[in-house]
Image 1 (cartoon, rainbow, N blue to C red):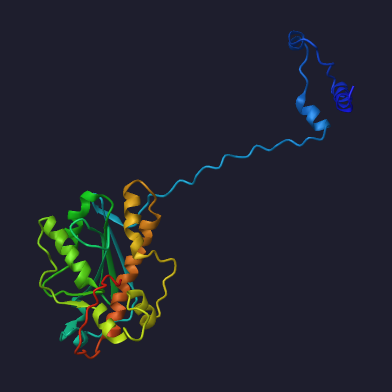
Image 2: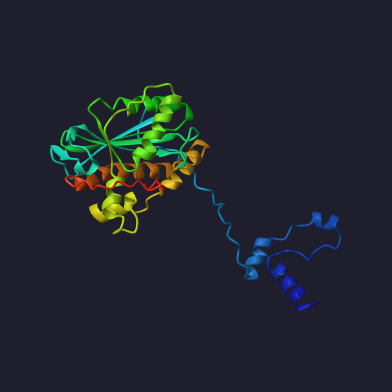
Length: 290
């Protein structure tokens, strides 16, 4: 008998278990060995059962109040450097504008190319209201809610509104005009004065800064450095992922990105207040510096 067989026989005897039967039928009639006891005597450790790791349930929660089916509304107020009652817009080849007439706006869209296939799924706007900077945001969580969003945004605009954007003349305003036309609604932006801060920033800093993107301008002039900011190029994927049943994590980050955009527009306008206009007005064909 081998050493291993002898050891097993001794362990069975100590555990009160008889010798194994030669016949399976006979073995079935006899007492079954206590395998757990044998393993303990042999010094074999029990393997702990590992709990099954479940994938964390992704959140579908989105911020804001649902004001229409599939349309969410957020409103926040901030203490922010307040502009003078009347701003000198010489830098934009305009005269002046009253503070209460300013509407800083920005869109998040399904693509940067524009065209009838591109839609805005989020619109943010900041204005001065009751001594603080009010930021209002609209975004849709279903395709069918676009018309409701366009109507709600139109309610924020009146004939005295002065629009403020960053590349909005070339991108945001034309895109919204297309969406209003396709929705068979009147375009509330049509004919309004529009201060596009990208162009004066380029004229003043294109030979000084590495580029004139909005985040460069806000970092250089406002000392705003974004942390964990979702790039605008990722916004379409974040929204489409949510529409297809995915988590809302990146959609929430899109809303935070849009919020900072419209806040920075207000600060950059205050910085540009009173700049002298330059004779040369060059719009780069690159566009989309947002």
